[in-house]
Structure formats: structure tokens, C-alpha cells
Length: 459
Image (cartoon, rainbow, N blue to C red; front, side, top):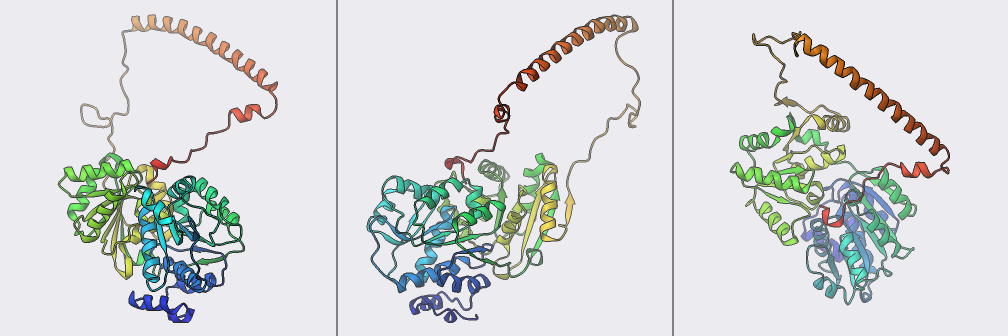
């Protein structure tokens, strides 16, 4: 399909698309919109920037317009879940832009702001509710929202929601939804956990997968700098001072790491700011607005917080920490090659991250050009400056060595006796374990699982 008119969407929607200067649908829209209009479940694999928000928002708005009715109090007809506040806000803006000529009521439910305004917005019910999982459950627990009227559930950036530990929240939410509903799941990557979740939540879904218009390697100048871990902050400063930067997005693995990078840059005289989950919503909105306007040219972010950053003109993406998921690398560097533009991606790789780079190169099917800034390994030297291969004997005089040898013999005897005692104890423990009821010993020694992050620790 070459035009949005080919989908036979509501005239009010196509008029709004013309005002937004949407000329032709993207591949994800071409494949997804007709399927959603048929009320089928969909699982879509697509990177940010491929147009997937419109792919689900347009057919949903068409359905709401064709089946208009007053919303039920404290309820919603369409529920869209996303991992971050920024992304949720952008999704709501898209629904409002595409549905500006329709009588559609939409609301936002995110953390970091007062819940009072959100409770009031839901009082008379809404057609579309865009929310983060944590705040949504808070509203349900506070009796401000009921989920028994949801006709369509959308999970956007499902892989990031799992990374953030939202899986249990999502299961609680789904348990409160009607069994008969349409479910749409979109994810940039498709790990095994997402496949399992889709199998549990979706009914006979249509799978839609699209690739970026051009591989990242063709549009982005990728570089790798091998460094010692301790030297990363200094080399980052050098890179930022050397490069001609319009806007730079720097990725760190943790929120604490993002703040640390910012402090280091500020000490070096480089203006920078950070965005992550420990920032209030007002702080995040202020920083993003400054980054869009160019008032802040260098932004440091975690992967999860960056999911809501939709900013053109990013000339550089710098991986201060190399991601351990190859697809995340592709997603990161794609921030600097939007709308066909070119960009530069620089990764600082220490010894512990070398395996991550190999996985990335396997995924993108190319070797990233690398330079080496690691300090040379030092060798022990003699006074003449040559490497010492044989050391002269050292230690106390022979008489003292004989005395120490005698004392050492006594020590070895005591150690031997202790070893025999320990072996006897181990044999006793093994005897007792053989008489332990089956399964109990296995349970006691079961390896610990990594716990989910607390909600306050999520980015």
C-alpha cells in the first residue's frame, strides 16, 4: 500500500495524517494496520523510529470512532502499557494528534507526579489510557480505575518492561482484564522470555517483523576504543573535546554511573546533564526540553530512560558502557541515524566487555574498527634494566633456615592432623546427608536467583 487512504481509515483520521504531513505508510504500518483492523492479535518486532506507534494507534482510533459510546466511569476501553514516562507521554501525544478531529478522551498515568490529577481524569472514564505498569497498579489498588471494560491491550517496548522487572506487574494487570480482548505486543528484540509471555497472553497472533530501512553499519561511522576501565572517564573527555558534536547521547549501564559521568564532565568544563529513573518527572522533562532545543548538547542516559528520547539531530552516540545485549547496541546507535541521516557511534571497551563486542560484531556482521588506548603491560626489571628471568636465592642465613625448617616441620604436622580431623568431619557430614529425606538437601543448596529490581531502582 502506498497511501494511508488505501487502509480506508476514518476520514477524520486521514485528515489528521495529512495535517501531520504523513505521506506514505512505513513497512510496519503497511503490515500491521490491516491486521489490527481485523481485530487479530499481533506481535510486532520493530525498532524505535519505524513508525510502530501509528501502526497500532491508527486502527485503534478507527475502531473507537466506528463504535463510539460514552466511557464507563473509572474505566478505559484501550489500555497502552509502556516502560517509561517519556515514552508514555509520546504515545499519548500521538493518539491526540491522529485523533484530533475525533471525540476521543485520552489520559496519562505515570509515576513521578501527583496521582490526584490522574484520579480526576479517570473519574468519568476515558477511551484510551496510556500508563506505566507501576502507576497503573497504584490506581487500581486505590479504586480509581477498573480494568473490566478494556477491549484492547497494547504492550509497547515489551523487552524493556521485562528488563525493568515489570513482568510480575504485567501478569497482575492481565489477570484483571477481560478474557475476550484484542492484545497487541511490540518489542525491539525477541528474547525467549518475550516469546513465552506472548504465548500466554495472545491468541493465535499474527507475527510482523521489519528491519530498519538500512542496516546501522551503512549509515553510522562505528568506532571502538579499547581502554583500561579506570581510564574511561579521561578518554571520554578527550573524545568530546576532539569531536565536532551537535548533540551527543552517552549511555551508561546504571543510574549511579550516569550521574558519575556527568560530574566528571562538569569538572572537565563540559556541560552535560543526565536522565534516569531517580530524576523527578519535572526534572526529566526539563532536561529533555533543553536537549531538544540544544541548550544541553550532551545527555547521559540509561537504556531504559532513553527509550522515551525521540530527538532528531543527535550527531554522536557514545557507549561509555558496552551493552551486554547485542540488540541493545543496535538500538542505541540508531539514535544518531534518524530519517536517513548519518552519525557517529563510539564505544569505550574495557577488558571485561570484550565478549560483548564479539557478540555485537556477530549480530551486525562486521568488525568494528578499533584503536587501542590501553596502558602497556609492565614487566619486572633488574637494576641493569633487563627483564629478570632468574632470581638469586634470598632469605635468612643457613642457620636460621635450619631452625625455620624444624619449626616448619612441626607446623606441617599440626596441619596434617588438622586435615585428618577435617576429612573425618566431612565424612560424618556425608554420612548424615545420605540419611536426609530426598530433595531436602537439593532445596537447601539451590542457587540463588537474581531478584527483580525494586520499583524505586528502575530506570
